[in-house]
Amino acid sequence: MSITSIRITDDVDKPLDALSKKLDRSKNYLINLAIKEFLARQSVEESRWEETLEALESIKQGQVIEEGDVNAWLNSWGTGERKTPPKP
Image 1 (cartoon, rainbow, N blue to C red):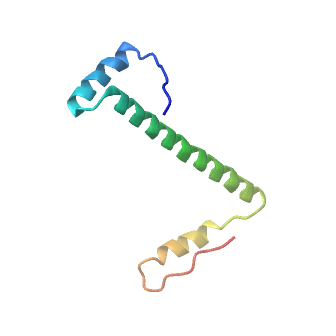
Image 2 (cartoon, one colour):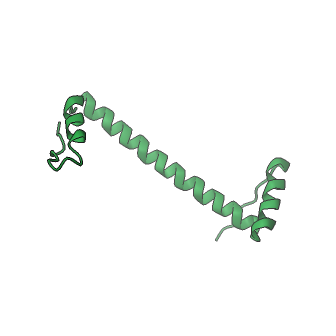
Image 3 (cartoon, rainbow, N blue to C red):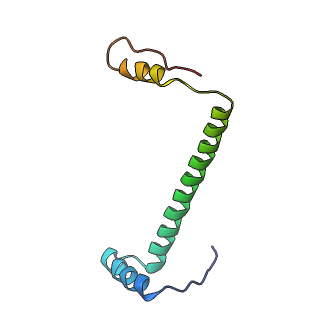
């Protein structure tokens, strides 16, 4: 485990202190939790961006599905005669 020093502004420190007392947790615990959650969100955003780039590339290559085909597939859900998903 490493040690990192940070400066916390008063507008963050006061609510952080109040929350740590309310939850009976240390400020260190809450800061680590917040950083973990931030890193997890960043990872998800990065994955979504990569998926977006892949989707844009497939569109450039003409790999698209017509809207009518998608709607027909979706409208078949719950009918007992579910269609297979359309493919490009």
